[in-house]
Image 1: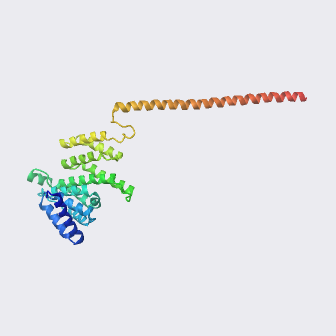
Image 2: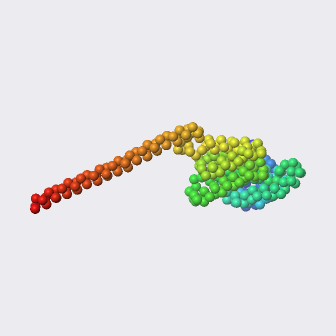
Length: 312
């Protein structure tokens, strides 16, 4: 439907039927069948669920569909199904990341498809010359994790525990870094692309950036040219968005940082010299005071001796 008002009207009719007239199970069946049979419907189905969530405050249908997709498995001959469902998941995660976050523990089961893919590798490549089982789903999960990291890092929801949010972010980054060793070069390339986009976040994640840099340097030795290209682009992005700009600004130029290092060392030497002079001056003053006290004591002894002689 090219007419935006007509499309919105159809969405609202479906949403009203689902929320107020018990049309949820029928809508779930229709959406799953549409995703199975039509390659052009992932985005409209995701948009309809987003309207149902945002404008009608009804998240149950989206949760049920996500759980059903998480329980699905795709065989080696199915080349269309994983791509359609991956588009749907990616689009829905971009529009409704909080809903996907609640079901992410179930959706992560598609990352385990790499094990099944390893055993079926020879059969798949011998039948059609390419790996066709489940790497599109792993690509979708990688993109979903990127959307969830962005949502958690930029969210201002005060009801969430900061410690729990940080743990979730750490786990998601660990999952992405593990996928840099995926069997499929498409997945490895997508991981580097997602990490590249995450470098633009206002939160810099210094600890994770060190691990990302190490993974990107390792990926420079990948046998696939596309992975090496994305790794090089990621390294450039890491340099351009380094977390030290708040203190010093600018790029990580070696000559600039060496000049700053020399300036800081000169200031440090001046401070140490001033401190030594202060300490030495205090010691000299103490010795002078001690000499004055000794002279006063000797003069008092002489006066007392003279007084005793007069008394005799």
